[in-house]
Image 1 (cartoon, rainbow, N blue to C red):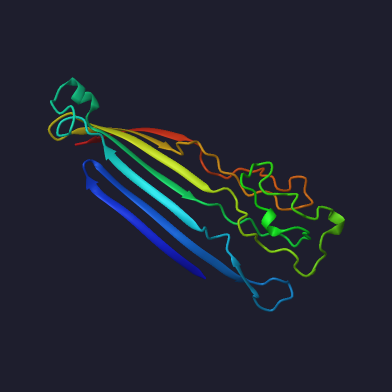
Image 2 (cartoon, one colour):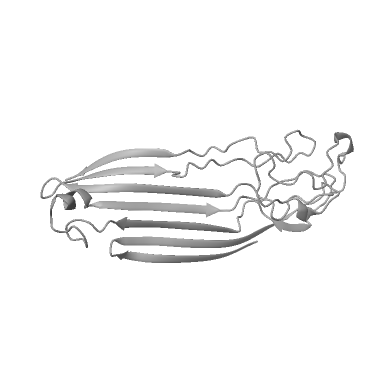
Length: 227
């Protein structure tokens, strides 16, 4: 079951500036079988394939310098240097997915104590909240479910990407221009990590040990001739 709200704000190109801001709120729940011997799904739960919200923003701005602009429009040397520049960028953010699926395990504490305010790679959640860590005391096969598949509020790392570009157009004739361009992907050089280990009997329980396959900061230089 999916409920979604989408809001988009769009600024049409004016005074050298254009931009789009989008916000999406989601509620995604799924019906699933709890016990191996159940004949049909018995519970509704939050889906780790649906994020509660996503923010997307993009903008482009032509700097107000040079011929036809607000400043340095006298056609001098400074106008030739400062004119024709454009900045653009886009940003995406969404919270991480719910951690899961948790295996069936014995837990003696309060589920609300599992989440932490500032997770780190060595302690993504509260491993001392009451998990049974002795392998000899874990549930046996077909043991009635004691622990939920997912815990509300206990999520993996959120997605956060900022990309930017700088372009400059130069006129080299009546009908010919050269565009110089620099693109920077993942400007903040943010590394994204896989979800932590969810096995209480593992020495890596609650730790993040693997990165995702996302790219690090990547800068591209380009030139285009229009004629």
